[in-house]
Amino acid sequence: MSVAPVSVLRPGLLSGRAIAAPAPWAMELGALGADVVTPPPLAAGDDDGAFLRWAGELAAVDVIVGGASHQAPLESAVESLWLTIRAVAVTHWIDRDRDGAVLLVAPRPHPEPHAGALRAALENLARTLSIEWARYGIRTTTVLPADTTADDEIATLVAFLASPAAAYWSGCVVELGAAAPSSHV
Image (cartoon, rainbow, N blue to C red):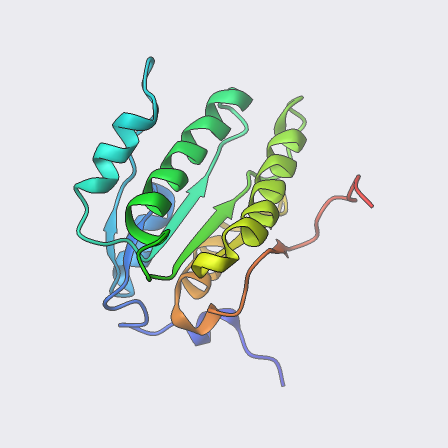
């Protein structure tokens, strides 16, 4: 018997969870009971300080959801995401006896020259952080949607991964739909 992914989601699933997530997933996560805040965008001249101040103003963060568009320049997309993740981790999780989760959502495969590189960068970041930050109880996961993956399918998976039910998922990549052939071994 197969169970539709939507059936695991219920109102209140994320109650009591503080989640930093950008607009594409904020509404879905909020509808499931999460207290959602939106990370700041990277502005010219921003450094660690701006993101650390933002994270320091938050009472708590349990999960950070990040992603990047293939339309954004590769360096700024990864830099903004890294600064956000690092600020939340050092402010709320590392050496604070508090677990956390980092969920990275890669862009869909796209013919843009750097779309594949961005997907690989997010996968590599999650795998590396899963090893480096495991001692702090921080888990990381990457979602790789296919061209045909619907936004609600991504939101459903993100909601599940943000829930306590996914506490054992770390360092893995979840491919949604019929993914393009992988170029890595």
